[in-house]
Length: 401
Ligand SMILES: C[S@@+](CC[C@H](N)C(=O)[O-])C[C@H]1O[C@@H](n2cnc3c(N)ncnc32)[C@H](O)[C@@H]1O
Ligand code: SF4
Image 1 (cartoon, rainbow, N blue to C red):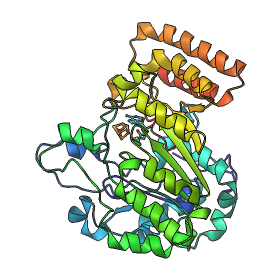
Image 2 (image 1 turned 180 degrees about the horizontal axis):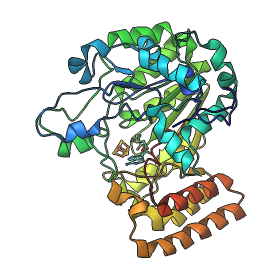
Image 3 (image 1 turned 90 degrees about the horizontal axis):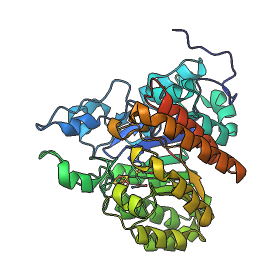
């Protein structure tokens, strides 16, 4: 299939380019590097469902893995640090393919969303980093390499988490791990904490870091997350860095609150999938009152918004969530639609319930428009088309940075 595009690489309407391979590196919970957090080549969660320890083969187009990763043992020739990962053979190939206007298989998640009329992470990020997008072609050497260290990092410092949300799983949450991990794999995974090369590289390049995205696991429980904040404060670079989180905000953010004033900006997507009882039913182990207290404490100190993962369990509570956000004077983001586990996806609502759900979403969209709330209205529209799509695959789990 010919996927080539006539658009210039720096044109934000370009159908294949993504600025992330030029500015960003993702490092997953289990130590695999990615072009971004929705890199199709990065995740192999099915391995953790095996009773016997399987061979941890990396996908051919995966970027590589860190020394502390379980993948390192089975892929010794693809073990690397972040600098090498950023200019690894697959990253270089990705850049050159994008510059030629070709689609890159690892980026299918975004292309699939766009093909169904939804917004993709690629499109959002290209708009945010238009200047870097314009400069991408000029910064690329003939072999696809680029000189600078990525200024935008998404390192998942392990899976430690206090909750066991119904739509989450092991290895993403250690609490899920305590319940359902296979005997050969520990509940808590943290491939980066003891990775001296990583910490040395972060220290040497601290002055180049401009943006961090933290998720997990639960970032406010991750020692590595605190170590990176401390490192940036210590080296005097924190003031250049925008920090963005997804957090369950059911744990005390006190230590982080002390560090926040050092940074250029702090944004927190407070994950919230329902109000009161619905919150506690979905976010198992979390207390609505704790969440509320933390939200109210932090909302005056940082840029805080409500981050919803729409799913069957909360489809009928979205009105309450919207009203809650409105009352608390908070923005709300409903873009991260649950696709997996399939049975929790709104796409798998019984067909006879879909007309009623469509009508409800249409009413909610009208309500948002009346309030001048265009972004949630657009997200609800995308949710409605996702629910009614005949092929609702790969529409979800986007980074919110
Ligand atoms: C994996 S969590 C990690 C950060 C933190 N523990 C939290 O809950 O915000 C990041 C985001 O992914 C969402 N999420 C969890 N499971 C999901 C799924 N199956 N599909 C889509 N999003 C999901 C969460 O609700 C959260 O907003
Ligand atoms: S709080 Fe986040 S990481 Fe923990 S179980 Fe819930 S979604 Fe997963």
